[in-house]
Length: 359
Ligand code: KG4
Ligand code: ZN
Image (cartoon, rainbow, N blue to C red):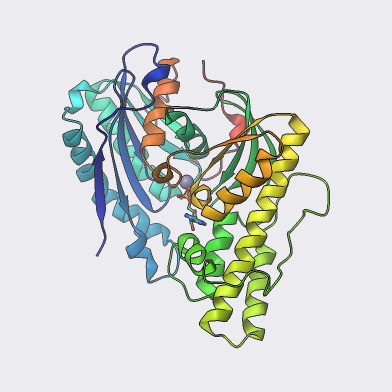
């Protein structure tokens, strides 16, 4: 049974950056969540909704791209109707349409791009295709107490692990990234070999709570050499070997989950601390699905506070994929006059440094 959720916010948030009145519909379909939201420059986030495909993919132990595309086709228009209804507005009041144009699954992205461009064309309003990871980063700006710029950002999702210096809005410098698996991907793969469901990150974190600390010690990859790049694929292999050598009991699995989580989190903390020292920045934004991880939040709070670094997060529900971050980022780019033209296109890969500064 798949579930859809629709929310309407009573208190609008994030309206403090407005320049001129503009209302933007945001559409996110880069992977296995259909996300839709409306952001209004005067009223803030008016409504948002998310349809998760987790149940659809669970039986396969991971996202099946073709099934993801088809489900976006089925769910996107009803979700848009639901969000407009929750916001008590009709489509004619929209001033722009924002959609995730990449990086992500190309078929899934093209569903969002086609629907967004069609609505924009029908309404005669501009459309803008956005970078998914910029959306994650800017979700932190929806907060009532957003970080000032410049800042550092740790972007940690199922597809990316990056330390990105945010010089100004839209001006990004990637200082380090994973050379193989993203940290969320490593969580998911390790969860799968421990027999946990998909998506594995939250399930592994829950099992790790029952694990005995230090029963197993996993390596902290690439922390013993200079630089800000990551490598997480070895941790998953380490978990597999440790599991094979264990008695396979639930307690052994919990201990392995704990060792994996500690190693992944400590690696992220070490590299973040290094990035802050290297740049002298005092603000760190942590965004993307793994930003919801409680142990990561605890460890960053303890470790970076010692170095007078303040850590910012998007609201918990906006750490993972959502339409709100796209509506908001779309408003920022549209109000600066950016448009994507009417060509329906998407990019599976898209380096953040190719983005243009937001005026
Ligand atoms: O940002 P996101 O929703 O989608 C992508 O852009 O990939 O991130 C999803 C990733 C998945 O790998 C999921 O397992 C991981 O974030 N994740 C977590 C937690 N919640 C989500 N990983 C560890 N702990 C969590 N609490
Ligand atoms: Zn994401």
